[in-house]
Image (cartoon, rainbow, N blue to C red; front, side, top):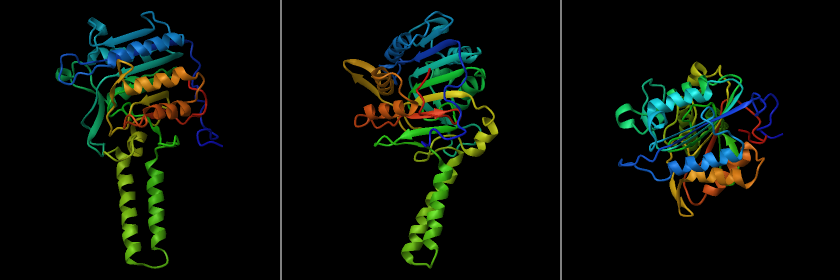
Length: 327
């Protein structure tokens, strides 16, 4: 039996929904030193895809925020949070969120991150109003999600691996194998190997090998509080139990890269786009009915060899990821 179809996992379809809503955010930061070129195009491309999938476009159902619109559709921090609250507020709704723009990191005010930083997304007015950190994003998107609704998220930005702090994180290797990021199991495995080396007598080589394994295990366990540059993503177990363990929301998130990586702005077929947004849309258009695992694998394969970023899938509860992707 596949590890993604184990007994006791929830059905990945989540609650039955009767309405669809979408929020698309694209920020090019025109006139700023950190300007991007493909984010608004990503939003246009994603909206066309959603329309092809039957998503309604009336103002009650689809909201687009960019940095070239005015009023409530300007991609300021205030408007982004208000739009997120709007997105997840109703019962029996399939919610879709796409963000293309800068991602960043800010100092963790709570002191519960091993790296000392929270991941962020970057509104157009970040220089005066600040960035939106992962705690804030989780509370507005996941904690506020109506229990009878589902949320599908695409973040095409740097440092996006755990940007909304979901407890289960999956990634692929270059051969397409999908694994659940689990620092606890890896740390225990390293300790077991180290202890095994020391059984039956000591030698200089055994001691040195065991020291290296013990050091590796210590690194994994310290990473449970959060991630440093080479540590695994996801909330530390203690922090997750304290803040989010009771939620179990139906949330799926495809992110452009790991927390310690950047996400590329690309020029493909003469059009400026985000590499992750492009690869995901190419994958979704290519063959309907793919599973969550297949979409993650195929998106990675399109990026492999051209871009260093490794896309990830994060989930709000353990589910069968071999079922067809639904949003």
